[in-house]
Length: 342
Ligand code: URA
Figure 1: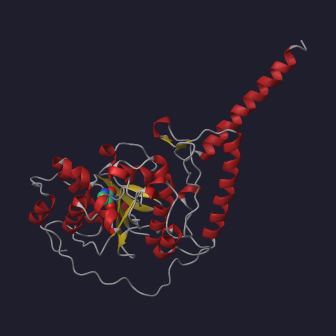
Figure 2: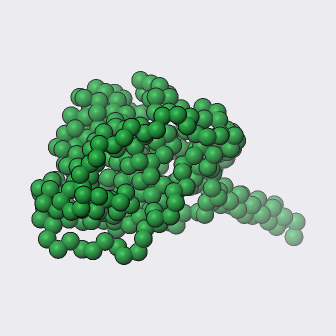
Figure 3: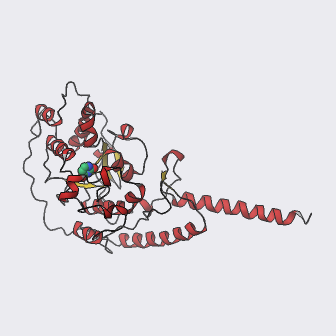
């Protein structure tokens, strides 16, 4: 009888350990698959402390930016005619599908991404469904809710975030880059486009979307009735992946906090996520872009429209029509209608 005791005790200890691991995993995974062992548990403890200090910092924040300067008046951008758009997108519009009849969630008044609003990372999270897990190599820096450039009690400015980024060496992309491509456009933009990462031209110039995909994006923006000076453009990773390969999970993890800080600084009305890396990273959702696109989502209280990446559209021009439908939904939110001068 006594012979059973050590085994039972061991068994009980094993079960308790499993339960503990499961609870930690549920609490902390936040869409990322983590191996929770004693070392990771200690790390999580540290992350909780960091997140909690960011939480209290943010809770103390008052009005995000001085009331001061109103946004510079936008040049009265003419809404594009269907012909303009047709030319811009190099894709006949034909009988465009009607816009979704239901008002998007965006029709609701925007809950601004104020520094006083809790970060998503703080919200209680359910354990992600198995299909939603993102694989993060153990060496990858993990986003723990701390936002770079966020000073206690203040909404960050883009300049603060850029300073914090510095001559970044946080991931291996730094070794091959010529320039960090931080982002460009109107710091008071209501509309933000998020791409994947710089290509060769962007790396050379330090400006996002200035190559072939950039030319198409510029046309898309124009077709929507905006100029590049009206909007802000950023990327998930700020350094060029060699040979234009996809950014890797550790690179995304290292750079993502800066993008999140930028969006906190900008607090746009709408984010257009260009392609799977932008959509999946911001939404922490591995649903393919083909299924995500065209449906309003929420990022930190901001309406987010996932759509195809311009580089993909250059290779698959038959998909431009769908992208245009997605952008039309965004235009609608800004009271812009294709073919009208509103
Ligand atoms: N593709 C992107 O995703 N970003 C750029 O800046 C350029 C091309």
